[in-house]
Length: 258
Ligand code: GLP
Image (cartoon, rainbow, N blue to C red):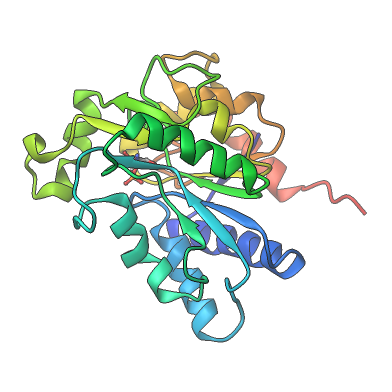
């Protein structure tokens, strides 16, 4: 696990560089997109590059991580709508190239299974962007999630509903209790993973992710078992890490494979 401590805007550029590099090498790559505030600087940088004519998504595909259950199609807080508004509608993905779990389906359990199968059938995610929740979730895999889980319905913790109430006008009761989320087993199949965490509110979860014991109490810790994860944090999110000097040293003296 590589740890990079940098300012938020630098983090956005670094991950955008990786995505641009991937799409240059492999224009038909499959991207894993996250919603939430942390990845926004990545999306802004990608949109800029696209506007400058440097980057095209025309042959790429993408899968989002999660969705609330029960919000009607097009609801401004639905993650499908958010990813469209913040990123997808500003670049040139082909129609239908970006898939999201269908939280408005008549049977979300069936929709979750179908989504997981579609993801696997696509060949799998080449590069996954992840945020991390204060409770240690990735996507909506709340504490106690099985490390083998696939896309399924989960019940949100009160903490997550409170954290996300800001997107619902501050009204925690408006935040759905259930979600459809890729499982930890699903996410672990992504070939390359970038986790982005900004702000002091993420410091505890980041300390568990990077330096804690692997435990379903802090679901993101399963990423310690993934062979190719980079965690990008600002100073505030890094504030509870013990080995900060070492992480900075590794970055300053990178071993470059020729
Ligand atoms: C949300 C999403 C996660 C996201 C996390 C952090 O609840 N389900 O996918 O990574 O919380 O969000 P933010 O980046 O806004 O702090």
